[in-house]
Structure formats: structure tokens, C-alpha cells
Image (cartoon, rainbow, N blue to C red; front, top):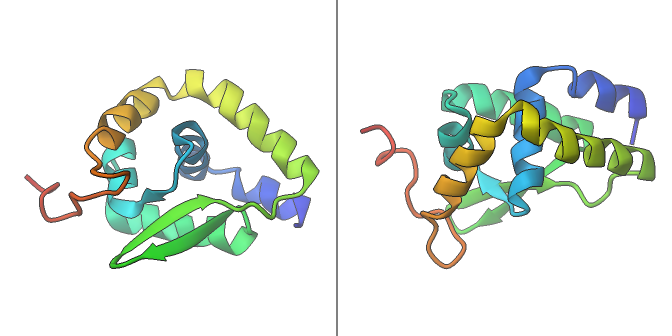
Length: 122
């Protein structure tokens, strides 16, 4: 994993917030959960997920019609250390994200998102 590329990728607040909620939640998240937690539009989240995926930080996993994103297990020791810093310190920087994440994860059934975008719109 290219350490310079990782730093460039994490040089954006939205991408840092996405990585932070993936770390804080300790579980893969779908895009609709991320849009609720970060209060950003779906296209905005998807664009930043693509950048995170290209850098090797985030991986998708399909589960039926849902795609869940998680931190890549293939990160290097240096990147793992950086992710530890994000997990410890960004929780305080984005406390509302963490609160919304806990509320959103509580809506899951059997550990899976069941809401999607259509019901979120109201």
C-alpha cells in the first residue's frame, strides 16, 4: 500500500469521516447508513468511497442486493498505526457522527441494514 497515496486520500474531511465511522462502528456499513450518519447525499458518499477503494483503504462486500464497505484487512503496519490515530482522536472531533452511527446501527435487523434509501427520504 502506497503510504503517500493514503495520506493524500485522507486529506479530505469527508473521507476522514467515512473512515472514522467505519472504524468506530466496528462493522461494515452500507451507503444508505453512511448517508444518514454523515448527513451527506448518496452521490457524495459514493464518490468518496470510490477514492477510498482505489487507494486500498476500503473494500466493498456484496450481501444480496446490499453492498457493505469495510476497512481493508490488507493495510500495512504504518497504515494500521494511522488508522489507530484516527479511531482514537477523530471520535472527539466528530462526536455527532458517532452518535448518529449508534442510532443508525440500532435500526439493523440481524446485523443488516433493512431501511435503504426510499424510506430514508421522508
